[in-house]
Amino acid sequence: MRNGVVAIHRDGSVAVVNECAYRTLGLAPDSRHLGQHYTDVLGPDHEFSQVLGIVFELTHLPNRSELRLRETGKVLGYTLPRIIDREDAVIGAVLYFKDLTRVEQLEERERLRDRFPAMGEMAAAIAHEVKNPLAGIQVMAGLLKRQSSMSEDDQEILQDTISEVRLANKIVVNLLEFVRPISLQIERVSIPDVLREMILRHEGPVAHERVVLVMDVQDHLPSVQGDHTQLRQLFTNLIMNVFEALDGQGRLTIKAAFIPIDDGDALTDDRGETSVGRHRNRG
Image (cartoon, rainbow, N blue to C red):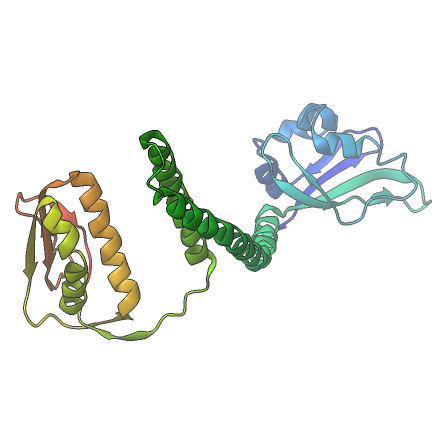
C-alpha cells in the first residue's frame, strides 16, 4: 500500500505495521513490534500515540484529519476507523495515514504567489507616497543652502541632509524598479554596440578617476536575443561595481568573445584556470 497502516487490538497491542508506515514515521522495521503496545512502538509522546489513545472513547472518529509531527515537521493526513466483529463489538482500530508535506508546501507556495502582486502594489503605493516628501525636502534644503548668510556649520548640516535625502530617494527608486512589472522588448541585440553605449555613458566618471579602461571586443560577434535596455543596465551595474571595488584607481578590462564549447572541453583563462565547466555550444 502507498499509505501507512497501523492496526491495533482492543487492548492496544499492535496487529499490523506496514512498510510505508515505518518509512513515513522514520522507524526501523522490526517483526517484534507485533504484539507490543503501540506506545512502546511509537513512543508514549508520539502524536499518533495520543490519537490512538482516545480511539475507543470518542463518539465520532476523526475523518481526513491532519497533524504535524514535532520531531520531523512532516504533515500527515489520516483516518481512524474502528474494527468490529460480527456481533458489532469493537475489537480494534486502524490508523491510515499519508505524508502530505509536499502537498502543503505546494499549497503554501501558491498562497505566497497570490500575495506577491498585492505586496508589489502596496510597496509601489508606499514608495510613491514617500518619494514626494523627499523631493520637497531636497528642494527646500537646496534653497536654504544658497543663502549666503548661513554659517559653514549650517552649510555642512544642509549638505548632509541633502545627501541623506538623495540616498533615501535612491532606495525608493530601487524599490519601484523592483516591484514594477518588467516588459521585455526582445529583439536581436549586438553585444559590442551595447558595450560601446555603456562605455560612452561612463567616459566622464572614468576621466576623473585613475582607472585604465581597456576594451577587448571581437569583431563580427553574433547578435543575441534580448532586451537592449536591460542588457545595457546589466553591464552598467557590473561596471559600477568594479569602479567601487577599484576605489578610484586600477585597470578595468572588458572582453567579449564567441567561443563554441563542445562536451568535454573547458574554457580556461590566461593562467590556465577553468572558468567555465562542461557546456554545449555556448558563446
